[in-house]
Length: 201
Image (cartoon, rainbow, N blue to C red):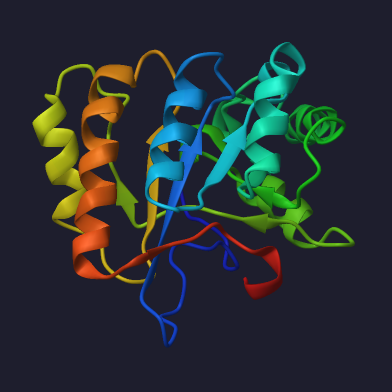
């Protein structure tokens, strides 16, 4: 599947070295607060690509994300796979999530989006920013160890990197091990940990 031009895979290097941690599929009532607590310890900001129905279920957690200065993005209302979903239905699902998620950042679940779906978002007024990644932790893969998950990040992270984690039950064992160690690694390397700002994309 070819991706259209205009998707964001990495952030151009700035004068100050920054990395961008992202978390998909929340908010979750216990896992998202764990993530927020760890981020707070390191004065780090992140971007949470939320599922609309999870925001409806846990509005207080969503509010905490925003209150603590993090960014949010739309991850569809029902975690739709773009490759398996009619374009009109897919867009409707994004718009449904947008009732609860005030953001023009979008990440396709599974990283799967058809050309016409992406084209619609990129040409909307105002346009959406479709955020992909260059570092995948694979924390959702229950076949890998927490140590391998950490290695997946540390082997590839560099200034400008967009890193994918998940604040979900499936990812918990690996994400909860890797995240504090990634935060410590970034601190030791002198990397800033920032949220994605649509004005700079």
